[in-house]
Image 1 (tube, helix red, strand yellow):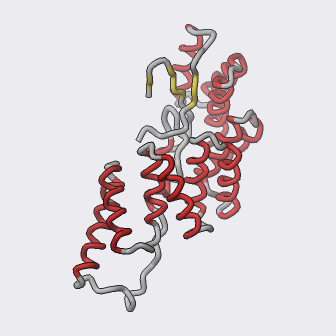
Image 2 (cartoon, one colour; image 1 turned 45 degrees about the vertical axis):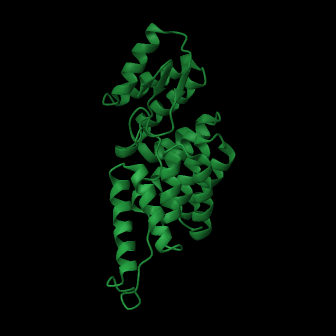
Image 3 (cartoon, helix red, strand yellow; image 1 turned 135 degrees about the horizontal axis):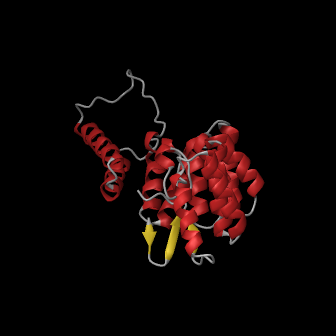
Length: 245
């Protein structure tokens, strides 16, 4: 994605988290764990109040899946009105508020979600992303490491932690984390992008070229290398952590 006077560089990650760039929240943000209700204790939907709750919940989920964030927020607030303690609402609202630029509201919802589900690796992954996006790198790293403590094979948390560590100059650890999550060629590309953002142009060129040599399908590297050839002193470079959706 291009913005005026800023070149948003791509990070190579995975399917939904790929692109220019592809640092994303937990892919499971759209499949947050929900409490399993006991059929024997589940309220009957013949109650008008329960019908309204069911409609609001389905509306919220559908709107969220379709990227209709304002409508999803409204629907989740309706869910909360009918069921103040329904699991998953705070996490959903936190992500939606963050995507809508409502940082304070997102922070409040994340705190509520963490109190509700302190052992949810997906939640810690998303919260780490949120903290990184607001410039709180230390907190972001802690949250992402907690996600990996809870779920060591959490791929998105590994990718996100690599970006946070790499953005602070920890290129070796970032390289190892990226390699574990997405393979050696893509890892070289991503660390090259991080070095480029930090102003280490020559090292970045070397890493991007090697990534392209190892995996020609990484097309982003070729376009960036071509751009660098015509602009040997890049200014205003950034690696966008926020997905475009």
